[in-house]
Length: 335
Ligand code: TRP
Figure 1 (tube, helix red, strand yellow):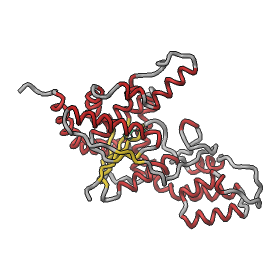
Figure 2: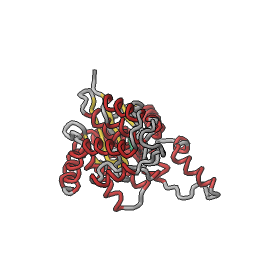
Figure 3: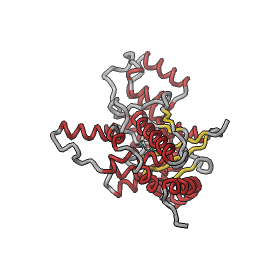
Figure 4: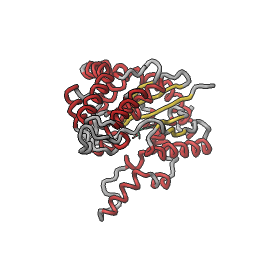
């Protein structure tokens, strides 16, 4: 079997949290170790500019996300790990694709439609606060994907439409000019857990209910103690399936330890005790990576060197493909 090229981007806004780890980072690192897979993983910092106009935050988040992946053991000799903005071929391809992507297709993008609808509901102009960046977001994402001939794109459900748009744009280009682009497919990992946050809703930066991945030990304990529970007393049986403490437990524990905790819930483990055990488990698993993370955060030159090396490797793919694309659309030297 030929190797599958798997590509995914991480928007550099915010600090990685336990939900990112369980839902995206851990499975992506595992997949990158599969010899049948060629992984392309990148920091989507141009995408970050769409959501965040605070330069310090974009910079800090890029550093934290890069340090996180490295600390968790991403093998950057195998996986190609780079920063979107280090690949000048991406914005160039974005423009060429913009000239071939139907505006009507972009009008249908969920994120854009939601923004328009929110404006209409608020009695604002439909375009209020909507930038060309937000509108063109799916074209930039198509360039990310098509630039590297990705077969598979692991994404959350909210991103499936964007991958389908990339496929659509590729088909149109291939038909009109030259068959240069691989048609990508979205892969939604249904078996990975969607972690619940402090309040029991999905753990997400937008709900302000996250537990950052590399909190110092004391703060991690505090955060875990804040997870919402019901008022059942010690000794009263508790419903494991209705508990965020149990849900997070099962994302970190072995099958056997999960079964044991389920039994403890049935026999009435106290919330304080369940949380203490959860802290011990998560802390023990993350402590070695947390140490590496802290070392990396105080050595940005090392992170930078790793990213630069990744960009070099990525450009071995993007530069020749972009040359073909330019030629196909008529951007060429005279002789
Ligand atoms: N838009 C994606 C997100 O917010 C991040 C992203 C940017 C991406 N470019 C990509 C994901 C290309 C997969 C492939 O999650």
